[in-house]
Image 1 (cartoon, rainbow, N blue to C red):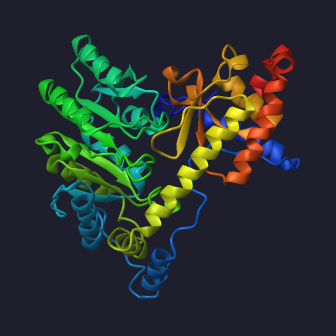
Image 2: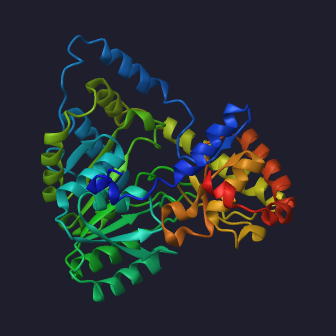
Image 3: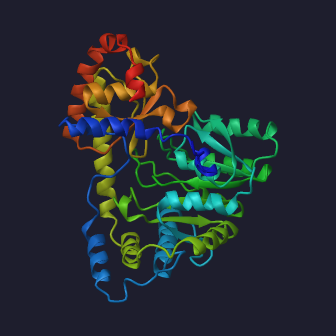
Length: 406
């Protein structure tokens, strides 16, 4: 048998794919799946952004190669967003890099920053690219439990005392995917002080900076004095403007890290299609009513999810931000584990969610639920869940080895 390639061997099986196979099989037989598993915005991109794309695409020169670090108009718009939203002034030439979504930006930052064997401090649970971007780059992940932001920082301090070689990078992600945890500016002040004490670089992912619900706009780490000495922030237009498939993100902050990323990207890509970049600039520079409307849609869905699932017998904490809820397993299934619960839920109730263990071992006991269906579909999911929970003794009594092998 031919062995796997070296880097592929370092990657675990894509856990989400197990449930995806079940969904595909059921849909092929006509089963209606209410899919709350993937964080894929279902609402249309605002019209003025699409119009700008179409207008620019008609230019005969639009199909030429673009710029790998982003056209200057987009980088200026990204700097303008940071000035208006956070009061942070950035140099668009040296402190802003446009990326092909936040995921690409994060992965290529890992390539730019990592030497073989470098130790990276990563929260657990976390979005997979936070760890595996560095693993693919040859780094070693020190997983730090993150039941809360404060406990994560406390764990980082302990990890620094017991890691050899000393870690070089600290990863932050708030609002968090998957846990929807939120932090205030004092948290970032503590994180910057800790990172400077231990000579850590900081990568802060705030892709959900505009999806918040309680008049609590998430801050930026770059608002902390001296943060740009050691930190960059990764952000995205995907959720803010319902532009996930457009693949427009940004890395901003520390000049040295931005320059390293820009150099790596210069060898790998020519940037996004220019009309997409022009339209992205129009999104950032234009009217922001659409952002408030998108935020209100997610809030309404969050409230519907929490209230309808509570009536169904599943208590789900209301997330303060992001497009996800992080839900403890319902009482009858707590011993079953998140993977078996997720498979049973889609098989027996036609409701797809993401198993918490897919985000790391400390995600076990929870599932991630995306706010990616309308209120009517969410209420239908809750009715399905109510019937599902009523059958818990019967379902748990079945042998599940066959299902686990599917």
